[in-house]
Amino acid sequence: MKFGVVIFPGSNCDDDMIHVLETVMQQEVVRLWHKEETLPGFEKGDCIILPGGFSYGDYMRAGAIARFSPIMNAVIEFANSGGFVWGICNGFQILCEAGLLPGALLRNSNQKFICKNIYLKTKTNNSAITSNIDLEQPLNIPIAHADGRYFADRTTLNSLIENDQILFTYCDESGSESATSNPNGSEMNIAGICNTGRNVFGMMPHPERASEEILGNTDGKVLFESMVSLVSTSVPQ
Image (tube, rainbow, N blue to C red; front, side):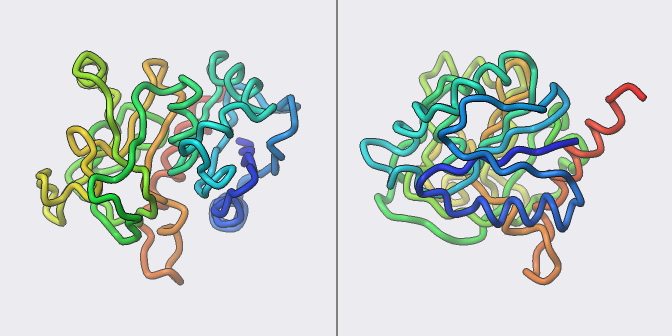
């Protein structure tokens, strides 16, 4: 499996992501500059990642300018053809701005930047990044954002529920979801979703910051393991 990590002006988690994919997961990684217009050599079983950061300084609205970077036309085409696309934090914002995921990420309800470890509840195993996760075991993963409050209208929220598109919700250490365990005011405590085709994923927490023993936390590693193992077993030999 091959991963492409798109680098925008203002990306600041690209090297973290590349390190985890290359060094920890032992996967092939290609750095993709945002001005590139194609994704040469990428096939349906590969994955394009939009990393966290502050693309274009979050001017106008987080992800709104990056959505128009030249490479995004190729990313959208890749996603529409069935390729995996995974957006984390700012990458999630970009995917929503590009229309690859429904809803929007708004300013945190407390109007402050939040950087801390939180707990996530995995809501489904029916996705490439959650296939190996124990649904009963909350994950402790960092967040770092000012615009992480997921918002969508009631029709969209109902559709997310009906189609099993909610991947993660914010919870407490025991797995209980409440307003207290919701760090940013997201609708229904939503922390991550996928599209109806189940090949585009967006999440605000940073699994790449919780994937090594040296960091004291490996809860995020299971997301990468899920994707690599699922794709490797599904690709015809």
